Image (tube, rainbow over all chains, first blue to last red; front, side, top):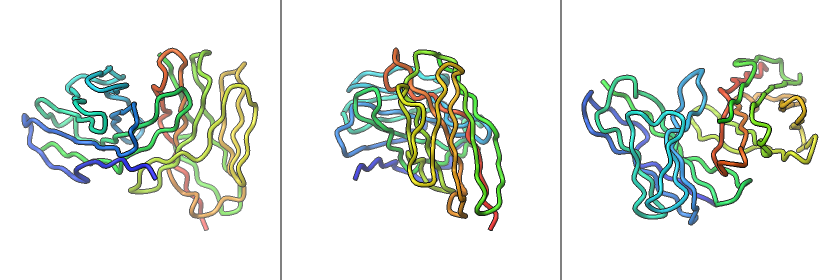
Length: 113
Length: 113
């Protein structure tokens, strides 16, 4: 069974801190995604990656960056955390191909104080 | 890019009744439409999907219909049970951007025993 693991379930940070959210998948998937989930706004794509060292902006990339140095790991970076980045962050992965389903991690609830 | 709208945002039904969730999309090039279910505190998981060359697909109590002309697709749950209570997300996949999933804003379904 595919496993997508996010390093933290809950995280509390202070405004201005640099924050790293880690995601690891164990099924050799080419595609990896970071979503943000907020009530009433659904799942919004922040960044995605189709290959190692490759990244593409999603719908809301501002204030975020990503890193994919290895195929199995996709990191989301908040360079200077702000209170409006308090949210649930979901990582997902999928095989390459048009109709491959997404496998999600359990999510990281980030609170920025 | 693709714009997916989902209605209603909340839905309450009595156990045993049917529930219908509707989504519209904007990009006529989209050809794959999955539905994800997210139970409280858990990750979203694929429950059913439909491809553009099919008008309807059924899996036990769950069915999805697609009207490509009108650019809308719907999730139908019959004989609802309390364990159907969850947030449901529809998504549309555009051909041009490959695996970039565009999600609706979600429907919170409550099945009242």
